[in-house]
Length: 104
Image (cartoon, rainbow, N blue to C red; front, side, top):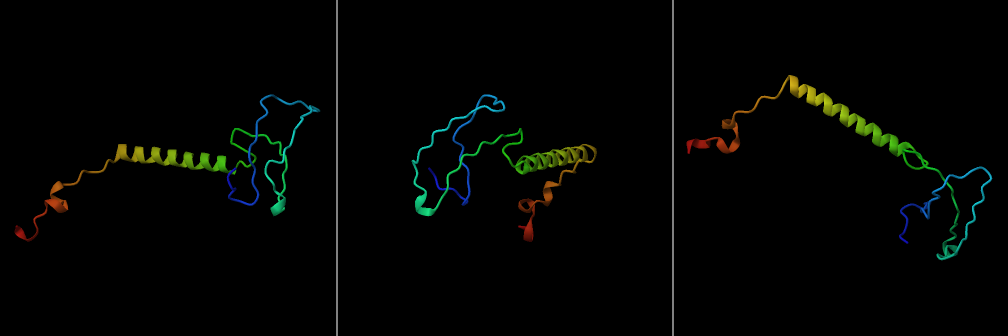
């Protein structure tokens, strides 16, 4: 078990692969394999659902979709600009290694 980065954290133990109905009973057996009494820690069981964006907090999923959409939009804008007004190629004689400083 690795040390968590933040003082409050959740670790996924398992998944319920079947759909639960109202009034279904879930039986859980707890074991104290890791002693938390020395630092006044707590253990809790959390049942949570996930959406297509991820866990309980949708901010990260929305941020990824927003940044990805912005990058795609800018890529299309730059492609259209390049198609209608492409950049001219530079004259290679102006490159630093092609110049003749001092007439040598």
